[in-house]
Image (cartoon, rainbow over all chains, first blue to last red; front, side, top):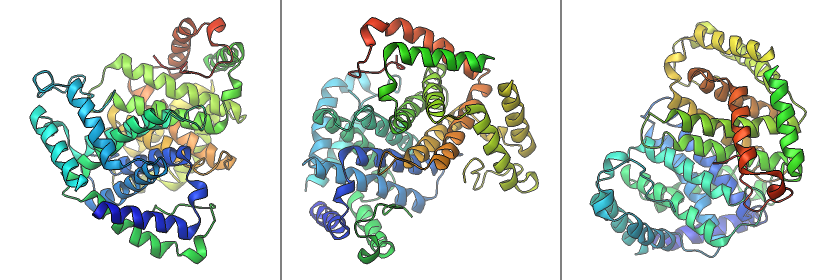
Amino acid sequence: MAKDEVLRELREFVRERDWAQFHSPENLAKSISIEAGELLECFQWNANADRSEVQDELADVLTYCFLLADTLGLDSDQVVLDKLARTREKYPVEKAKGRSTKYDAYED
Amino acid sequence: MAKDEVLRELREFVRERDWAQFHSPENLAKSISIEAGELLECFQWNANADRSEVQDELADVLTYCFLLADTLGLDSDQVVLDKLARTREKYPVEKAKGRSTKYDAYED
Amino acid sequence: MAKDEVLRELREFVRERDWAQFHSPENLAKSISIEAGELLECFQWNANADRSEVQDELADVLTYCFLLADTLGLDSDQVVLDKLARTREKYPVEKAKGRSTKYDAYED
Amino acid sequence: MAKDEVLRELREFVRERDWAQFHSPENLAKSISIEAGELLECFQWNANADRSEVQDELADVLTYCFLLADTLGLDSDQVVLDKLARTREKYPVEKAKGRSTKYDAYED
């Protein structure tokens, strides 16, 4: 629902501006890192950040993530669900519960 | 649809493992940067990357983005749509078309 | 002294392995981001990190920074001193003392 | 030489502004990632970047690296040399020469 609308809007935005030429997977991956840095900047000197600034920078990271998924023909929701299924096997509840030590649940 | 399922699954995954205690906005912002770096690593020495590795690392970035949005009570799709509306005003088609110079469309 | 030795060793290491071909400024900038993410990972879930892991990851970030400076014909120490001189003008003591608000001293 | 001067200047800069209070290892690690993102931004849409912008952003990454090393009582040059020695053992010339595949020489 919202997701279809997001993709439709993003694609139209890019098409109108003729920007697909800049959106190689590599450039989008760089852009995700760059925007992730700007998001982190909200928390640079303390743990509390301005909510609307965080929302703004999170939007940028998500935008490039959605564009990268779309460029690769991937459904971003499905990608998360698939990974979560693999992570469940790797970090069964009885082993992982409440432990942060070597907490790298979302990594392979 | 898929989105609701993603959120339901993510929340259950976190709850089962008692991991909400680690998911402060700051820690999630750090995690997004860390995973964005791993995604970028797929493109470290050349522009072509293994598709399944990219999918895997993109899943990690998205997972933490969705968790951060959820922690802040934000809808990640809506966040992207709202930002896109502001960006449309800032980068009207007639000014931005086909130009990569100072192409910072998604930033404020 | 040590600095000259560092550069001599780094250059020899790269030359022996015929790796200069991979060390474009862009690839080195990507590498710095990637390694900075690994350094941050030491602090992902809490503020205390293993000292030897931090040292190890910091070494990687510094290595790529030194290689990028050398590739561009820049002296990394001088680059820092020059920037510090500009930052001193931008953040005079009387305005900046003890304030973290909008603490972005090292940025332009 | 220059290195001693850099450290002396950095320490004085921080002391004058009473900023050591903000320079926890964790905050410095975040700052390195943030600045690495700004450096990468010079290469966001193409491989060619403005030299003086790169120099400026590289200075910021190096500044925080030097501050982190100093905070931990580490000599940044020695840290690089020590890591290089370990990397030499891990990537002997005869195995690594001219190969970019799984080129992760500076990582453990």
